[in-house]
Length: 166
Ligand SMILES: Cc1cc2nc3c(=O)[nH]c(=O)nc-3n(C[C@H](O)[C@H](O)[C@H](O)COP(=O)(O)O)c2cc1C
Image (cartoon, rainbow, N blue to C red; front, side):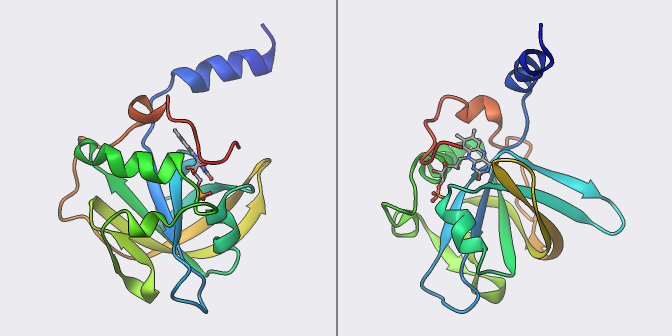
């Protein structure tokens, strides 16, 4: 088995958390964007850091290029429909934010009402990681008062057809 075949088998079998990442252009409140992300992980404890990979093809990526921050949401499995909306539709064709409940949060970023927990991170660095761009975040605000252990994972959404191919 080649290294890439083994790798594909491994990552296809792993169950990891899935988040909804949102953003908006810093200079324009009318540009909310967001998508489902699985390529996301804490990278440091002190200082706290989190990395989000955004596909270069995604509307969310293009909007994030004009933003200083991202909001990262944990969704509970009771809100799977919201995960489906953000993962299988693209802001290039529809306004996802007309189809879900949200409020402007820190810096006007869209915060999803269905989120069990969320944080906003300042984008410290962007770097090419392949077909995605890594966004290194410094958490600056958030809420975890309804944090759940029943969060949406890859197992719940692995069969979704993404709004954009990676
Ligand atoms: C299980 C799953 C995981 C995904 N992970 C990511 C990811 O880490 N980064 C990303 O940019 N897109 C990811 N996507 C794809 C986007 O969520 C999807 O293409 C979305 O429709 C893009 O919306 P946009 O064009 O409005 O940004 C994932 C989709 C699914 C179903």
